Length: 112
Length: 111
Image (cartoon, rainbow over all chains, first blue to last red; front, side, top):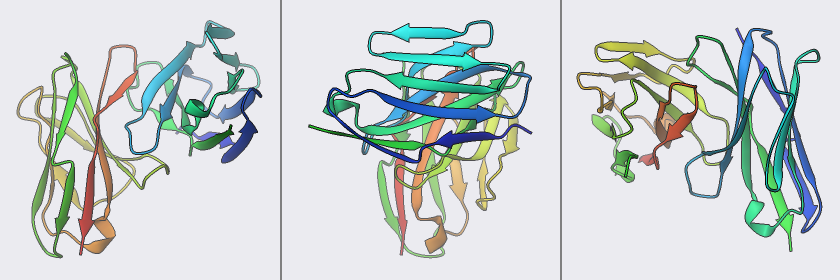
């Protein structure tokens, strides 16, 4: 089955810095890679996703990159703000499967 | 507005009690899921359903059962609650492309 490794487990940055969270996956058949943000006491919510036919996708201050050859994908947050503080989860799904494999999460702390 | 609803939001019960956590969605999704998550920690899949009368166990053995009699309703039952069941339970459904939509969760404390 699929295995998703996520690093780092904790990331502390100063407001205005960039933050990068990396995930690797094992199943070459995986073709959908969503990222979820979970604020304290709230539910996880999708913030950005990418499919395997695309190398990069941007949405304002967040971007996701995918390297299919190396089987890794990364979340990039620029100009971080205190409201970016949350736990971020990556996930991978293979075609035809509706069971995502989640990474273990990264706790991002943005210091004002 | 289309959403996923969970009740109760908080529950404190004694050991050995039977409880049912409710989940309903108005998203029109066929596929639904239950996850167990200690706050801010890993998401553990405990049950899922591809549609009415379909239920499967996930990776985590949680000593719970589910049913799917209606598309919009996916309740989770613990026959005999134990302190090890203390956690947060998240219900989710998925869109056609695989994006998961989560409910607000039920925080369970078993004394």
